[in-house]
Image 1 (cartoon, rainbow, N blue to C red):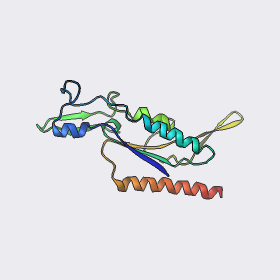
Image 2: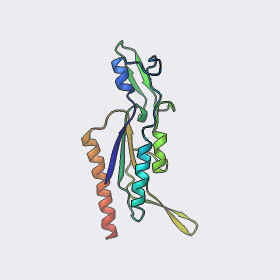
Image 3: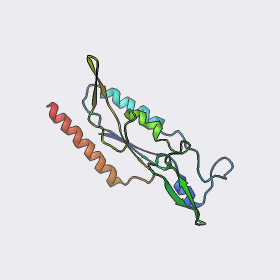
Length: 161
């Protein structure tokens, strides 16, 4: 079982504190950054080690406003609210990481390799299990997900005997 957690996007915290961001400190929302590229590299490196395996027990936990999976309303100290839209390309970076799981839906266990028939051969996909949301992950939640992936991994190893 391999896992990592990435945090990107402090918009919720900044809005709640009344902190304006941007070059001129006049924006409620900061355009998303690119801190997640390292994650993609890590997945590729572990995938290289696991090429001869039938499982890929890799989980990534993404949190912060750049990984929101739903639109969030955050109240400013003056009582007005700001929407953090999950469909905003300027804010959301989930699309930048889903290439690591072949653009399959997120928040699912993909420990078991996927085999695709192609002509007279088979192509094996090793997809990362990417879990994302705006609010921080609790340790207990991550532990439950990692246990599920670890159990899937052990089950696959037991089948191969």
